[in-house]
Length: 198
Picture (cartoon, rainbow, N blue to C red):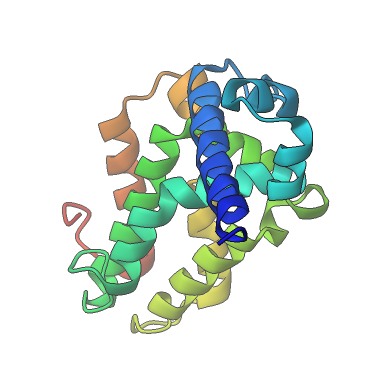
C-alpha cells in the first residue's frame, strides 16, 4: 500500500502540470512567454517535481502536445474515414493534412513552441515530425503516380509548419477556412484528389 500513494501523487502532479501548462500557453503572447517556473507555480508543485516528471521544457512541451493530439492520433490509427486506415489514399492524404492544420490552428502557441525547441534546433529531427512524415509517406506510397513519396511528404508537411501557420493566421489574418481550402488545393495537385473532399 505505501507504494501506491507516490504513484497517485505523481499522476496527480503530472495532470496538474499539464493543465497549468495548457492554460498558460493558451493565454501567453508567444512561445517563450511560459517558463518552467511559471508552470510549477501555476500547478502548485516545486520546480524539482516538474523537472523530474518532464526532464526539461522541451519534454514538457512534447508531453502537452501529445496529450492534446491524442484524439487525432486515435482517429488516424483506428478511426473511421476520413482519417482512419480504411480511407482510400487519395482522400486520406488531404484529410490528414487538414486535421494537422486544424490542430495547429487550435494550438498555435504550443505548436510553435514545440517546433522551435526541436531536437538540435531542427523541427525535422523531432519525434512528432518523424511520425507524421512516416505516416504521410506510407499513404502516399499507395497513391498511383511518379511522385517521390518521401520528398512529397516533406513538402506537404512544410505547408503546415507552425511558424507558417502562425504567420498566416496571426500576422496576415488569413481566415481558417481559406487556409484549409488553400491546403486542400495544394494537396490535390500532389495526389489528384478533389479539393472539395475533406
